Image 1 (cartoon, one colour):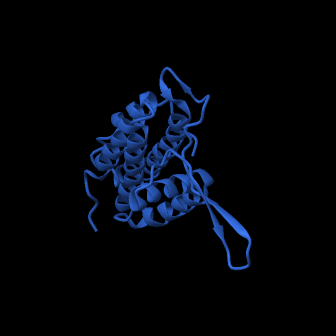
Image 2 (cartoon, one colour):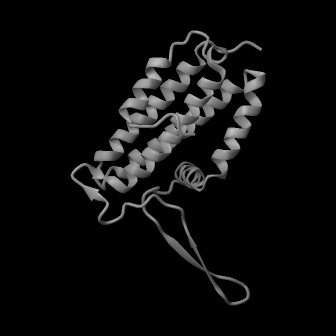
Amino acid sequence: MQIDPYGFEKVSFKLEEAEFFLNHVRGAGEDVLPFYVSAFLAAARSVRDSLKRLCDQLPEAIDWFRNEDKKLHDSEAHDRFRSLRNISLHEGENPVNAWSVELYVDNGSVETITRCHLCSREGHRNAEGNVGAYDDCREHFGVLLRLSLAARGQFGTKLDPHGITGEAFEGLRTRNGTDATRH
């Protein structure tokens, strides 16, 4: 199987797309915040999907990615973001505001279901916008950036034959203050 020579450039593009929406989350007013968070969630998911497609092209990267992806899925934070993305994309719900429903079960008891949400909490907002939502999204972005850097570090030119993304990744890491060594 031949590796897409521009595969890591595609991963880098998806990271930059997620970063674009992340930056808009920071300064967004309450009226547009849900739109930027929703766009960030979709873009962030596409980072993981692009990296998976690339790793699937290299036999020795398949198991590595599967193991890293399992760690990602075992993370409560990632699970929350995956749920948020699915709720936003598939059910059309606003990913920023919480809601809950009381259900009366057959035995007469009441069960409350609270949707997973990214809080726009009072006191987590300042002149730069919704800091609570921004901090949560930024943390998730850092996880995806570190995963991408780890893949590139592990497989180097096997996955990135042209070595074209080093500067792009470094720029993303620097702009977002992400410690790429933590993974």
